Length: 397
Image (tube, rainbow, N blue to C red; front, side):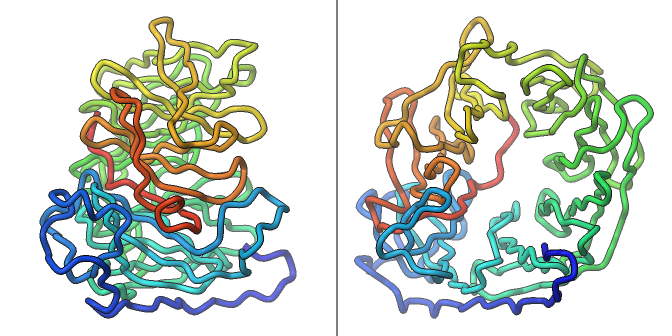
């Protein structure tokens, strides 16, 4: 977003496609990386991606040569505006270079459910949204969204299940608006922005796995809409003054992070058909590190959470029988770092470690039952830093 009065211009999308096979390193076969643990840390040819296996357990990430840094600090060897690389990373840690880009204002913003496309957003007004074909590394679709000094871009996501359209949220005068666009920028639908029972739309949205319905976070709870905008149901969350939808916890049950005027964010399981909201987490201890419960994932009989700590730190936590949370130490991650949960697969958590309130370090898998972690991108495997990492879109539960 530009400063008021500044000249606005669209920056060109600067994606450099990688020639298939040109960066093959240490691999002479297209055998699945899932069957080749030796691939961890090895850069593989994009032409050897086993597309029929890409899905749960895979990561999509951007990486560059700069090491993670805290705000305002400098690390020797880091450069201004480094070249960013987009990698697909298989479950064993083999990385496939998809493309490189040089626009410092672009960032990875989404991954389609068919696993074939990624979203890049250039957030300089007017905001440019581009889809990258992961097979070729080239821009397949791109358009400029009408944003300005008064209309701000907030988020974009592919629709489910196959990512055939985009859900875009914008903000004007503190009011959020949800719209659906085609991949080329044609406005297809504008959704209701206020609801009789749960109030104004708050900016968060989830497509149902089949793409037929949308769950929207609102000021006082959750609203469920059909894909054409028809209101299906509303569920109030007691005491909430804002709610964010996070993920589908079960069929017709949304996990929401809600807070009130005098309460910290807590997690609620909201039944969109039963019309009830049950608390997953209790109000945090006054003396504890928990400054808010933001998301959760069930692995076996345990529940792991994304929690907010003091001064902007993020950390991994585990739910206890009393519905309070306790921090989880991840092997190999410096305690002062932030940890972001990306998703789950095969009884493990995909995580990204970053410098607290700073830039990215590594993407890794954490096995809670064994208390082990395995880095698949970033230091110590290939140095530099992981800027953004996405797990393949979460299933229900």
